Image (tube, rainbow over all chains, first blue to last red; front, side, top):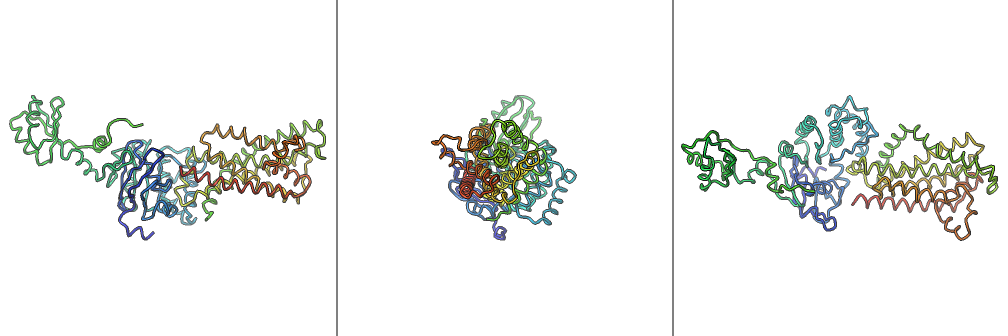
Length: 314
Length: 252
């Protein structure tokens, strides 16, 4: 286990491939996740995210390639890896015939924890998750948010080094989502967090680095800003004119630093190679009836759609 | 292989059984008791002695054994299916340092324990309301059959619960395979009733060894070694198959 702390990457995959018959779910997938970081994995339905998580959590074997977690090989060190990781799966896998506390006790026993150690740890986690008062209630009687918090508590019980969160906030109300986010932020740095989500605001808000995958391949990776910059190669400004917007748009489109132009009513959206070009644009518009110039923030959703397409996946 | 994971899962199953023991037992006792009253009491005046014993005593060992093995089968099949397909708890076990074999062993032991507990309770009820009595010494021979028999049915339940994804299929397997196997093995009639050509086939069934052996152990006080070995051997084969099939299914 000490070996893990000497390594800079908590998770690595090399040319990882998984095939189901003719279908290639993962196609020579390469990835490195730094220790202590929050890493987000995005992709449309069927992109291969769940397959990747199932291989990394040793629930499934790859067809070819390599994957390691904490420096351990997923195909040969399954048991050792499972003692290092915590997993919050998409499904609510709580045992409805056990109380909240009994669910945690069972998980502690499965990890071979000693009773005196896990009793204290369970008390701490229940307190942290605001579930102390409901610890003796059956989980069936819990709200979706409470169940999710209990699943997160269960995954953290044995103090994992790597935490896998597979769509941890799906189906939660905004308040519960925020509560889960706050908790993830509070544990950031203490362990590596590998997160998949369909909520792009969630990835943007939480993750140090984000990877976007589709058709089993890694198609982009970087910080949120790096991905946004990659989308247009520069910055987009919205210029609102009092009149003749189309005329001024035509004039701007002839400038070399302008990448693209879009006219919507009296507003012209101008994509620039870099923000330094703005002074050149302002000079060109000298005397024009400009009412407002505003920087248009690219969203992660725009990046995602531009890379994976807008069509609905099955 | 450490069995710490198996013990943890078995403890969980026993905790749940303990909570619902009275409602479970009411349901479990009702079926064999109805059979006993209908056949043992209702029919005994017409049937008289079978193999030298009154009909009500002839069927009693089989009913106790049927309760135990049916309970073992039902607990294993439904528990595994529910935890795998509905509650996804098997998935949550599998991301802990517990091996697939440990999960299977835990579920087999849970089914087996359910069988023994429920069989014991039905035996107590039959003892209480009928003249059927057993010498304490006969119980050792009987347990030598009942323990591998319950394990065999528990393993069969694990295999069904692993392979079947739909609950209605599980019900069909029980109706088409499990119950006929139990009823064909001479639970309510002596094997000598079968045509001679069919008899070797019926005698080859592990359920025949189990029910005939149970009757010989409890009624005659003999130790049917060949039957005990046949049931134990079949239980071992079924255990290996259950572990292999579960591992294969989980790797899918």
